[in-house]
Length: 451
Image (cartoon, rainbow, N blue to C red; front, side, top):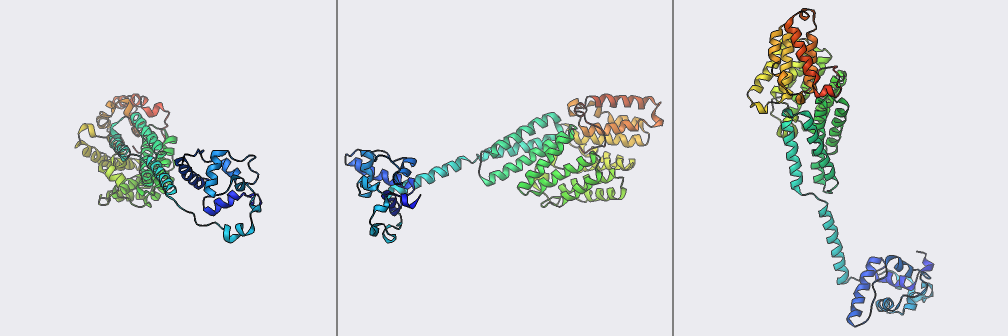
């Protein structure tokens, strides 16, 4: 405010330490209460805008009416007319620096109570912006369940459930201001995004799969969670070799190893992915090195995502063997492929039928069939594929589709062209792949992919 335009009221309020409107209003109410107890009529305190006009000389055309003036006069022990005069008219000895310098505020019980109420109100608002912990616990449990059921559910069903969970997370992020709850929610968002990436990939939709994987990596970066970032980079790595960029796949897999906090399961998965990338590069030595490195991860070191939650985030011995079988097929090593595929199927045979993940059992059986076709064993391939042909259409992932197409290509070799068994098997494969969700979504068939 312009110093030359101040009123005496301004000087007195400043000296009393009640210049701010809130402090002024509190003191006004206290004095008004005293006057009412004496039987005097009072009015509510001036509003913010009216108060500011009272502090400026000439700011009001008429003096406040009686009830307001009564309170102001009692507060400052001056007639209302004096209070609204220019501060320049005050005697110098009364408005000089020694006498008119702001003094420490005079506190009273009313002000203390008001401040206490403000603090209580603010703390209540802060508490309201915190989620019930049970909400976060339920989100965590739902994500764990979905991850562990992933391989036994139809991809479309997984997509809808994961998408619903991601939306819940995003809504809840706006409902809490608690930092530790934000951390839990970003962790959940990363898991949901990773599951959406995996299922989009299984449905043959590469573009959204890559986008979801990147989102998972970003959420993991936000909370500095190494296993989450490693999982997401691993996904981007096998998407890269499926997309015809195996060298980029190797780079991404190696980058994933650099994140902190990884357990042996996480590293076994990354080495298996790297082996597949080297297989696409036809680099036998590096592929075999990565296979051995994967087998050396014995599970002594653990992390929450890959081991405690597991499921789709896990990478057990059966899945490792299945992936290694595919790597051997890329290297045209039918003997190694058959050995790894049989190992995967044997390990899975010990589980109850309802708990056998189709995303692992299916590719392993198809790889076994392909290994046998490389040795011209059509009947053996037919036997390996019998359980595959019973898989319902909704469960036919792109991993199975691509491997079957590779098996169908094996059947185009000259020695099979006139063999009735080979022709029959080729027709079964064609009929099977037509109904695959991945085929209906327009998936192409450039390379065998991770399931």
